[in-house]
Length: 193
Ligand code: GAR
Image: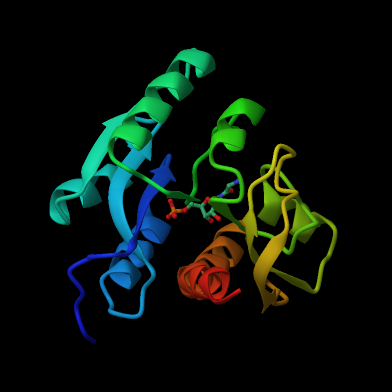
């Protein structure tokens, strides 16, 4: 694996709310030469998000904005992103909904990963709902973010088979492992379009 300096790569921010395992996989991906992105900023709405530790480990700038006042937080966010010359945003387990106005500022430049085969199971509790509906398959989707929740153009999906004794936890784990591979692949695809 050839490590890159990040020179000339698209300056990217990753937004998280929790564990940040997708963030970690994106950081690792960003460091290979073939990666079109460099991760320059981590944003979280949750000061206790475990994923914030990756900021320290990988020496990446971070900012916590609580989103209690969405307008105020988004205005601060826009100013931080612009100051840091951020050109692309990857949502990775970010559990807040961004406003139309914010999305407009980064039109076509925001990606999200969602733990279902969209358009099925938009929103929360995807695994529970898939299991309750006796689905044979679930999976994950990387898509562009538009103003409607989990509804932007799909970039890539990965299907995962649901086993007989599947639980919410086992399914989440299985899908998460695929998410870590899918997000980098989807980014490569976006830059080859
Ligand atoms: C992932 O499964 C991601 O797809 C999901 O949250 C998890 C975050 O895990 N995102 C959503 O549900 C967004 N609606 P991570 O913090 O370990 O990357």
